[in-house]
Each structure stands twice: as structure tokens, then as C-alpha cells.
Length: 323
Ligand SMILES: [Zn+2]
Image 1: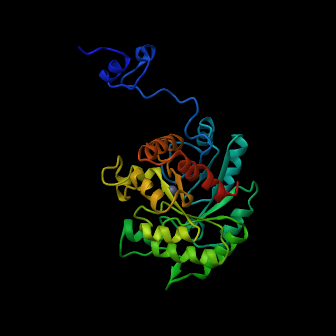
Image 2: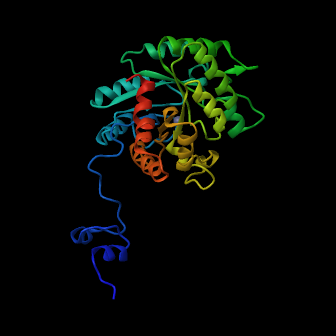
Image 3: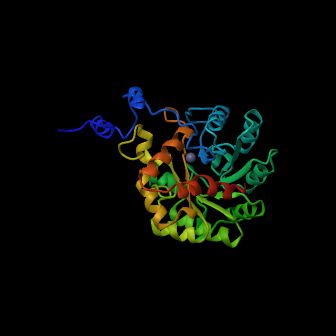
């Protein structure tokens, strides 16, 4: 006869071993209890999109910084496709003490494209929160040809295998001021050319923006090549949720790069060369701090170790930001 002990009872109700008092409090159909310490504690999210913006966003700078601080996060990097965010980062830190906020500039047409002056004024702004120079995103040739119209053209950072004179000048500023070069939405070929030139000019900090999705679309081999030159490859939680079955139509244009790809990248490229961020903040999507918590759970479930997560979400971002 089956002897009903605690273990058998737990198995019968589909739960792990737990005490009778816990069983009494089990609640089916509800989220798990809040963790005493958020898994996001100490994390720096290198890629968030708060309001004000020209696209629908879920939270303002201050709301997002407040939430990230409540979860114990160390910091956030605000990205905006059309205006600088270093100034906003400084104001946000004044309003929300206890968390670090950084910003920078995306070199789209709204700031004059590949415009060295815009980069010079950005890093000089009071507060010193301007750290990231993203190459063109939706104005890039790669983005336009991939997502808009293959017969139209956009901004390029390299021609005939060489970076353009404007790109060269900008790389020199990034090197001089020890900023971070983030590759935005330029092509894989452009990524390889610009990373090589950046290293020649002494750029220390390079992040390949969502490197393995269709824009830029690096192969694992190309990712290894730029990692060997000292670049870090960014993998964003937003792209865990994109692809043909995505929740919203705008998300279906982006290849899915999920937890299994992160696990594979850790094995093949190494956690020392990877950064996990969210790229979240869109209206109707989960908040970036919730995204960080879910991203950690997903990559753990895919077999990634706590040590490697610590590198990809805490140590490597801090290294790039020089903190
Ligand atoms: Zn983004």
C-alpha cells in the first residue's frame, strides 16, 4: 500500500518537497512571492528607452530610475534615437538619488548624422553622464534596406572597406574622452571595419548593439572576431520576445535571439565578451527592471551559471562605463 508521507504528498500535488504549513499557503494561479532581494540587484542595464520620446514608452526617466532603484539595481543607460540623453541622465540622478544613470547620443539625422561636433558637445555637458556614442539606428543604410525599402539608402560609417572621415574623427573623440562606442544599427561588415579602426585609434570600450539579431546580423564567427579585438556583444531581452510570433507587429521585424542563443554564445564566445541588457521601455511591454529579472531566470533555465550572469550584467557593463 502507498504510504503517504510528505514527499509522496508533494509529488502527488505536483509540488517540490515542502512543509505542511507551506502547502496550506500554496496559491494556484498567482505569481510567485516577491523575492527578499531582487535578482536584478546590482545590475546595470546598458539599454533602456524611457519617455520623453518620439515613440510610445511605458515609464518616464524618473519613474524608471525609481523602479530600478527599488529593485536594488546599480544603474541604467538611457538611449534615445533622436536626442541626447546625457543631460536627462544628470537631471534624473538629481531627482532619484541612490542610482547611477548614464546617457549619450545616437548619431541619427536628428543630430546631424555622423557629426563630430554633436559628440564633442555631448561629452562636455555638465554632470558628466554622457558615456555612449551609438552609431546610426533607424537612419542607417542597413536598417533602411532591411526593414524599410531595399532600394533606399541611409547613413553609412564605412565605404570601400574604410571608415568615413567623419567616423574617423568621431572615433578619435571616443578614444580621447574614453567613451563607449556602441554600433547601433550598422551592418555586420561595417561593424568589423569600425571595430578594427577603433582599436587602432585606442578606443577602449566597444559594445556591439544587439549583435546577433538581424540588424546588424553578426554570425557567431564574426562575433568571435570582434570579441577577439576586445569588443563586447550585447544580447537584449527584447529580442527574446521578437520574431514571427511576437506580441506586437513592430516586433515581428526582428529576429528572435533567445536564452538558448545566450547559452550558446557563453560557450562559444565567452561571458567575458558578452553584455546582457533589456532594450525595453516600450508602451505595452514589461518594464526594464522586470525584464532584467525575467532575463536572469530565462538564461539560468538555459544552463548559464550565476558567475557568467554576474559578468554579463554587472561586471562587464561596469567595465565599459569605467565604474
Ligand atoms: Zn534600443
